Picture 1 (cartoon, helix red, strand yellow):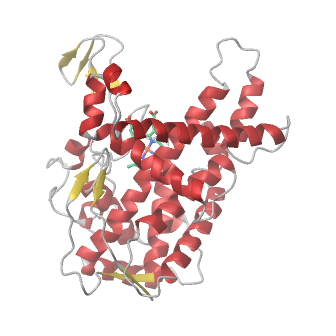
Picture 2 (tube, protein in one colour):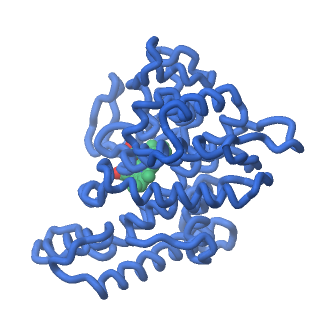
Length: 363
Ligand code: HEM
């Protein structure tokens, strides 16, 4: 968290990395020249490049084969463990490890991500010098390793560096991409919502203005729509398993040491005590009677507590800047050949829409 903060997460100087990717994304959509396309890949490239530039200090070209393999691996490493085979593996790991089948792909993806990150670490080590201004998370971690090299209990070592970077790559790519992918689908489903966003953005965010995270205050409706997308189609239905380290009482329930706890985020995001129309997509959930943005304490897509999402400030900044930029630049519509917007969700470790196609009409 310290490293992310010193790279500008939660501060202004992170935003230039996001603007650069928002611009690349806009160019990618403009190049479709009004033809129908699936927006997942261009969104994925933009989002993955933000986290790559924070971790590695550089971005990848869209056509780079290892970049595309990296993106594929971040998905499969979540999808496969959540599949039937992944479930069987969890029960019989020793047997399944020896058997062929799609579950073996999860290990290949893990090996690929570790090898890619190890290469990056090595090239950083080659140019690392004590006192050199750190440019990315790997540099910062290497600094920390050097500072704590004489501490026998330090956990700053190369293996933990590689694993931390792999975790951030996976966490920083799939959830944010999926949220934006859902966001565009909701705009197809609710054209009136899209029209209201266009009106709001046109009134306060001129085309020459560089959209910043602070601008969310000027466009409360746009911000409310984004929050409602995250509430209504939260990407992580539950948080990951946590294990009780002691006997405890949680909300009046006695839990023994060793009990696994799976936080049900969905129950908070759909709690009728906190949301007027929990099952309906309703941006008004995040607006007060004066049309100002209103937060809600049951809004927990990033979970809560000490182990809540480490990437929340980055995700919030990215989501707003990408979403507002896209809506200022384009009107999104369903292709003529397609009659209905399919809002069905599939749960593959994360809650994903079915692949869809879109028209991006420059405004
Ligand atoms: C819309 C975007 C995102 C959503 C909805 C989301 C959601 C979550 C959730 C629910 C957790 C589990 C927290 C818990 O165990 O209580 C989590 C953990 C995590 N997220 Fe995110 N996340 C998003 C974006 C990001 C980004 C951009 C990054 C990278 C910078 C990231 C990195 C991580 C990591 C590394 C963890 C594990 C933290 C730990 O175990 O301590 N996430 N995220």
